[in-house]
Image 1 (cartoon, helix red, strand yellow):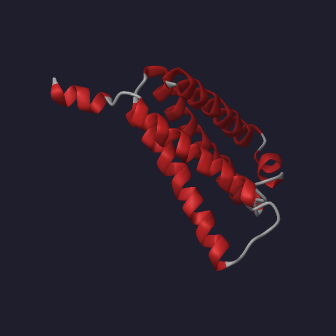
Image 2 (spheres, one colour):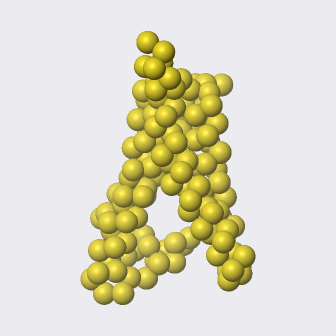
Image 3 (cartoon, rainbow, N blue to C red):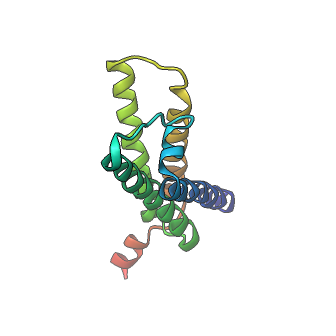
Length: 134
């Protein structure tokens, strides 16, 4: 079970790394397509999409992949918090503004990230606790 969960974490991290690269290289195309629906206003908006979305997916991906590779569960809390915060923001928007076409898919992806990261966090070793005990 631990091996399967570690492999899933690593694969999801690779997907997120691909998303980070897409936002870095082609921010306008990636942001406006499909689930994101983001349209930049001018160069500042394009810069914000490139920087913020690349960092969001990139940091999440690196922490997931590094945590899975090193069997360090503490690193998995970072993507769990990133995607959990995003999920909470989308839920608040759903209540405050209402549904829009395709609203469920990004929420399911984010919820999947959170569940996967927290499940692996519970199963993999916590290096922080091992250092304290030593």
